[in-house]
Length: 131
Image (cartoon, rainbow, N blue to C red; front, side, top):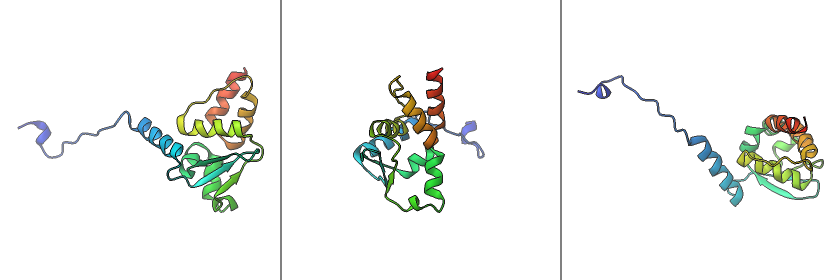
C-alpha cells in the first residue's frame, strides 16, 4: 500500500498561475463592463467603470473611501477633479493589468495622482524614474 493512501496524508496544492489568471479575468470583466459597481470621473468628464474591490485592493485611498462611513461609499460615481482623463485612464489600466508607461511627459502627473490615490508602488516607480 502506498504512503499516499494512508490516512493523514495531505498535499497542499498551490496553483502558480492563479494570481495572474484572476488578474486577467478581472481585466476582462473591466473591459466588458461586467460586474462594475463604481464609476470614476476625470477632471475632463471622462468616465471609467470599475470594481470597488479591485480599486480597494490596490489603493488604501479607495479602501478607506468604500469601507468607512463616507458619502462616496454610497455614490455610484466618484469625481476626481484634479486628475485628467489620460492619467486616470492609465491608472485604471494599471490597476487591472499591473502595467503602466511612465514617460517624461506624464511622470509628474502620474506621481501626483499616485500620491493622492495612494498607489504606493507606482509612486515609488515614478520617484525612481525622476532620479
